[in-house]
Image (cartoon, rainbow, N blue to C red; front, side, top):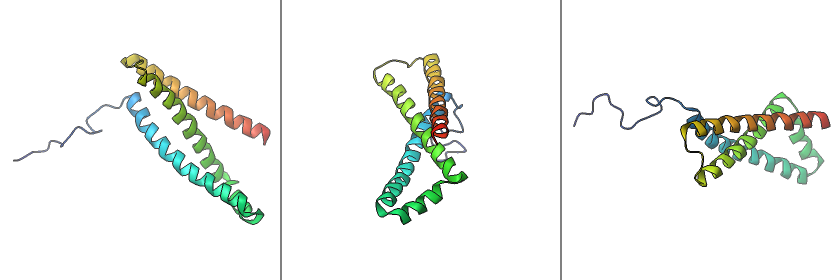
Length: 128
């Protein structure tokens, strides 16, 4: 039973990338990023309860360029996951399945997530 050079099943190399496909993959990736971020948040809480010495270690790790970049990525993942979750709730209600509507809702999702992330960090920088 020779199969030749055919793939066993359609794969990403065969399909053309669509925005909705990228957002679906991004939704899963942002869920993983949020899980990792929550582990860091738990580390921060444990250090806070552990006293000034342990909290100073966490603060030293997070108060540099890499720490700020991780926090920015966490908030971007949070807002993207939330906006895309609302989009999925609309789909669960049975709306927005047309190709053009799905593409437009994807653009709105990216705009909302990006806008909320930038707004959040502008507020953080103003207050800090």
